[in-house]
Length: 253
Image (cartoon, rainbow, N blue to C red; front, side, top):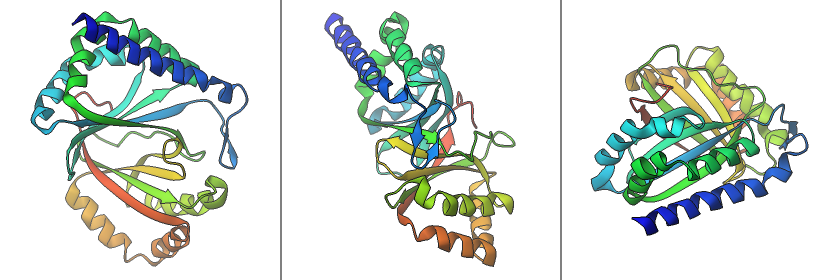
């Protein structure tokens, strides 16, 4: 147990050091692919791949102990993903700055309850994990769903190189026609900063899976929507999506 605790503290300390090395990037206004980022707030996307036979155990442990993690920084949402090859969860954390992220991980490395009651157990249940740093696009903000319940879809678009300065306006128009026509509620639109570059993620909310299917059918027959999407598709390389269900403790449901 002692060696495991030392190992975990080392991992957390290394994560803090990696974040600290990124601080020099943020001493000036953050330039984000053709637009000046108005503030230093970013959102960390984390994906935990769980050993299939331990999925229920992992979710139960996280439900019981997540307060140890949210005591240090703001959780936006935590979801279980459906229609996948393996079991995994997806969660979004708000970071006010890179310096704040460093302080969070430094504090976690010194938090015995979080280490002993949660992370030392949870790490053993994971097969791998990914994380990505994203910013909200300049024209988007976090907008919670109009009500709890329903399903969320994270649509990920791999765009051509060049960033928002090249395809930002066309992509904004495509999202705007969907939200403006009342077809869908956009919780947030994010673009990647660290991780796979030139990615845009749109977090959509629907009342139900059947409502989503009906809306998509309707939008595909809307000439205005089709025309705008075609202009955006010129810059598109590929896309994928995931259907997600909120965990009981997720702020966004």
